[in-house]
Image (tube, rainbow, N blue to C red; front, side, top):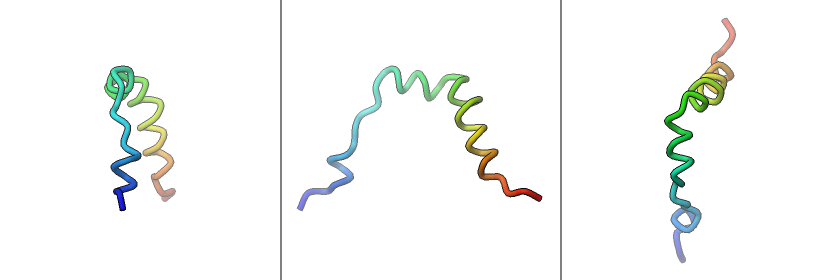
Length: 41
């Protein structure tokens, strides 16, 4: 039986690598996601 996760792996594209290093990723994806995880006080 083959490893399903190994078969599902797709290498990151050049655009994907650029996007993950961009301010757009940081400001509009990561910060929003982190805010969503913050518990209300």
